Length: 461
Image 1 (tube, rainbow, N blue to C red):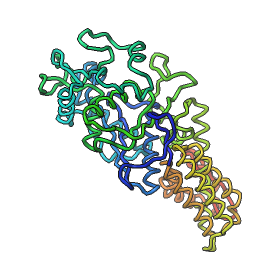
Image 2: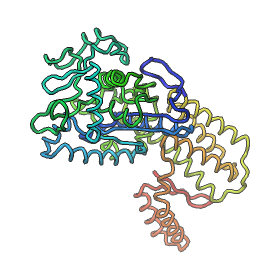
Image 3: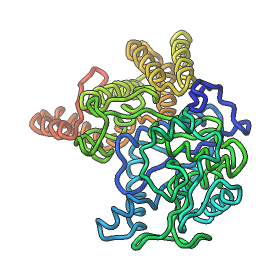
């Protein structure tokens, strides 16, 4: 598999540190609110990467953190008259509601910053001991001028970064780019004991500490959105490599933004949408489908029209699956047509080639639509064995993408089938008023009926 590495600015063959295993650290949310559609892109992309690597036979150790102490969280707690811990618990719980809706698998480990204070302090002590960090009035800062490679992820040297820095001036710092590893206690803020006095960790240090603790000093893949490249990931590299004396990450992956109606998403513009907001209009499965419809490094535009298009595309696949499931009830012949299966196998290889080429989910989806197209055109001529072959392949490949294609028929099947039986009996008894009443109820449930020579078919509208 080839991955575009932000560090080298080129595609590289993935060669894991341990044969057969891949370690991934993906930056998680700061849990002070519901996560927005831009966050969702990052979470879905790296969940899909994990799924594909597992599908390819790798054991994946996947770590995604929760930042559960932060300036934004402190502000939120003060606004709501509660504690930072209660804010964290509330929104971690809400994270999993939306993540489950998007079919995002739980990480191997979901560490929290507040549960890893000892590891954070240990890493800071190591940086001070090696001369890369300094204490000022119970705050501890990383000294960027001591790191000769600082700026390598963003591909700028220290002079360029300093001239373009938009960082609050603090005369106590040796350089404007120096960043906080430990923040001294302030009234009303959560704090922990440390060698420098009570305080709390800076944002960047938590990821280095938790990545090292759970995955080791050098990991295969570190992922996040492009806005994390600088300063967050640049700072992670600096503090990790200076403390541990070895390479921190072999492959850096960053996804592009989601824009809203071709404008950057922003609360000030009123175009800021949480996944919870969007899920009230479109189901989670359609949101995931939309996110995967473009290559992860390409900007993705969010709009009602594009969401409707994504929902329609997903419905095409789901309708094909429902048609196959219905046809299987009366189909015969266990053999699989070799010409038909050969064409499907070719599309499966195209799917895998897309995924192997820097996780190109757009090309992978196109291959699934090719399978749907050829199956739809051939369905009436297929044996039971060939139908099952197509169904299994669609289910397998959509599963790699985390797309659910038959859940609606599973969840509604018993109730709908029972109502269809009642309607059929009413028609046999010439009780057409009751039959029409049942049909109208099904319509209200979003179920469309189609009378065919083989019986009544149904699908979601």
